[in-house]
Length: 366
Image (cartoon, rainbow, N blue to C red):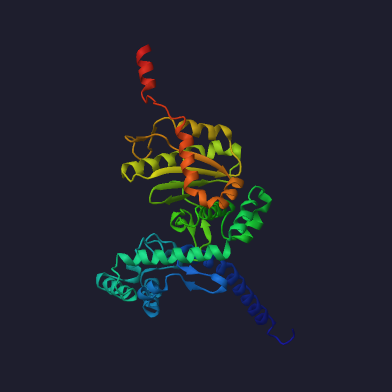
């Protein structure tokens, strides 16, 4: 303390502590951003690329450094008078809307070379077949991931935790600390349905929520589509999952679930696929007015919100609570039969509904 360099020593220690603090703070943020890309995995503490074969053909370390960091450095010295303008200016490097090919400077000739390199990694496959091959590989990896990390009994246990919101921290610890509990609920519902189907459905492609490269849930599905939409050869199943309580469902779920169900059925009928469309509303408890209205609307024509000239009828929305979904896991041998029974249940009340009933009535009295 008396050597005369105390201030320097304290400053160095302070600087070091700030560096370590920033590393802790920004490393977590950086990790979350990388996981959200879906191509960087952090499994078991190791950082890996989920699509190594493709990335090896596209990214070359030295070229990337020169083209990204090099460009920023040149722009900083050549075009910006001050740091604030460089970071916040409307025409700055960070505010420009720039395509990935422009950032990497991959133009027509280089893009063709990348395509040729990719095809060498997949001999005998056309460039159109390669995405299908990669998707098949990811599906197999996801199936292995579920078998290892989410056996059926564990899924049942997790489903049983959602009814008590004091279990939220435990649920995040078990599944993913990076996702909200409602997002995790969608994720676990999908895995439960995968077991209910006898592991035959492609649940990975059916999720509309965002997954990390480690297959962990990150962000819940957007509002314009169903949470999980499963396309099979003879049918389409949509799962809408919510942790809203019964009193909140009227405001938060009635309209979007009905809209998604109508639009999906209209899309299938317009494309003339011949597939039967069934929606399942998964929640811990239900508002009875909502589920009874859904049962009733199956008997009337309904209008698409995407195309006002198109109508459909017999829209099936079947409520299933969390405990019932857990029990369905053991009913995989009856998967097709149960979904067929749901349709028969809704067909019972179908009537010939006159869509112009109001206009005719008002026209007769006015």
